[in-house]
Figure (cartoon, rainbow, N blue to C red):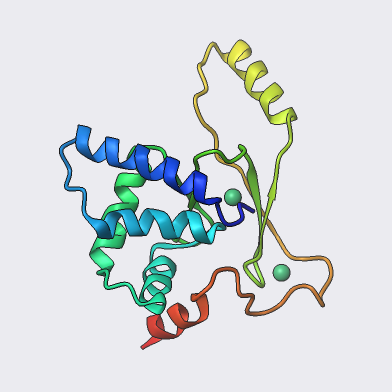
Length: 171
Ligand SMILES: [Zn+2]
Ligand SMILES: [Zn+2]
């Protein structure tokens, strides 16, 4: 899983985002830049509410709408990628300077394991040839359960602020 980004990487992605906002004539607000920074600082997978609560816990005054709208902008410019892990939940993670990978998701504890297998590229090449098709993306999720019950925690803390986010969602 992508760990916390280095300061250099944060500076780099901030520059890319600034340029993108300028080019598309979107406002360059400090809140938008803060959301980007926190995503890269935290690393890992998260949903939009996780990020909102994380930022709130740290003490940022940022609205839920800003978090959602910034995620859309970051998706557009390729700094963040979105996955659909079961249910209807959109899960995000940082995309810049991070390896291509796929995911295994535990149905019981929600743990996400990343894996990378070069054979997928071979399948892609072969299918393009056989079907006369140009592949420009793929999505692969494997679902199951952790084989070691001791490691399969019922409420795994996958992202800082997650438990509080879950608690507030129930209110
Ligand atoms: Zn991932
Ligand atoms: Zn598990």
